[in-house]
Image (cartoon, rainbow, N blue to C red; front, top):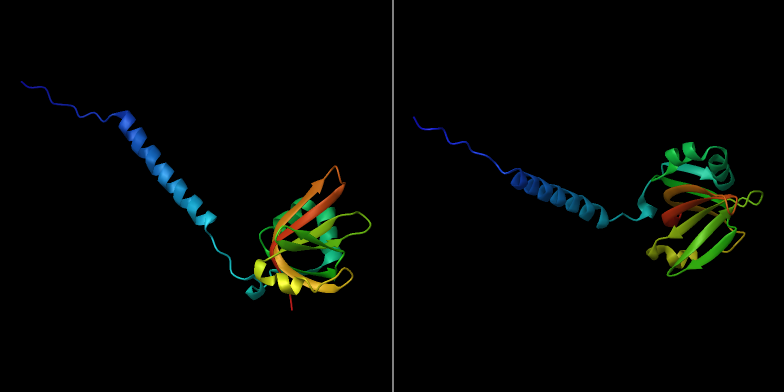
Length: 154
């Protein structure tokens, strides 16, 4: 009587194939997010429209709830410009709460820099951007709320 031949798969081979498959999947996910293009924020309808002082106050009152509500959302914020900062190749507009020092800062899209240059501190403007969330600094004792892909809103 002959013994049946057992086919054994090498566990190393299986682990190697599985590991390679995971690498390919994660590389695809990384590539998708790394090359993701965003449309012009000017053409996107905002999820929220708020006044600057009320918006900052919402983060001061409960930053966890405000971050959950606004992060990665398009928000239009209206208020009086406190400062304009030049940063590398862009300009940033800041709305500052004078009582706490907390602020919302907007980094503008490259194609909207020309219109931003006409804005001056003290101007009343509406700015639309993608909210990156707020963070409290214990050193500054203030909350900073940052935006990306910003544009002046009509």
